[in-house]
Image (cartoon, rainbow, N blue to C red; front, side, top):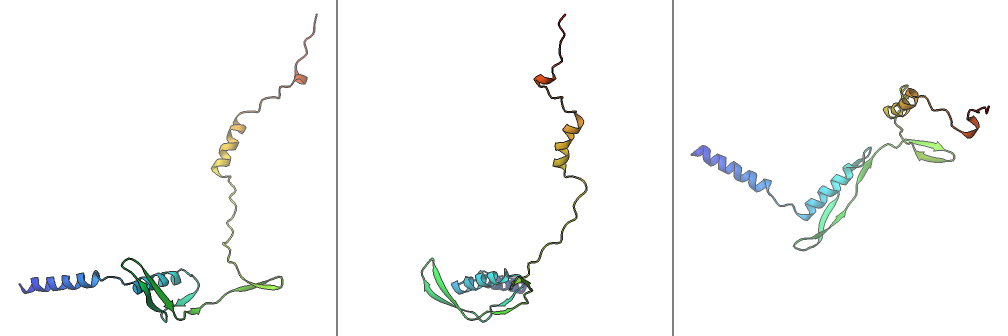
Length: 131
């Protein structure tokens, strides 16, 4: 009986904390964190941001986000002409294949297998001799 009571208490705690309603500030914070995470190469710390509900109805809300975002990154710059620009990383060049792609083989194969017909023009008609 005691074991059963512990199981029910544990389930009760999981259900009460696992099904907690997400409030508008929590949803706004999750969205902002997701957006900050998308900026690869930048370390963006949004922990100093504050979220405050400005307006809320039964099915909508507006949340004010204020504060500062700490940024840390190193930008590689190159000089192009007289201006400094962010260096664009290019993918390494792939070596060219010596074998043509399958589509090219298929296009060439019929022409190589069958010789081209001789041109048929009036100038090339064989002459017949009249007796």
